[in-house]
Length: 77
Image (cartoon, rainbow, N blue to C red):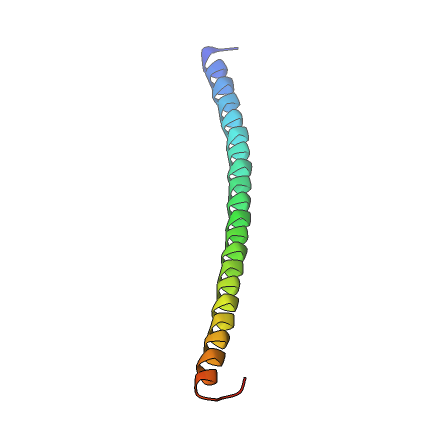
């Protein structure tokens, strides 16, 4: 095998290794993306749960306040 053929074989081997690593990096990046999307969905659910809880508390307190104010003026619940 000539020096040129050896260099060509080595270059081809390096290209194949780079392709294999690129595929691994792609899979890893896709995994990170999936994980990030899952975490974002979890964060959205938690945020919406907190908003719902806050909204329920506000509605309850507003109803209690309205009831109290109406009782001052002789209104009924």
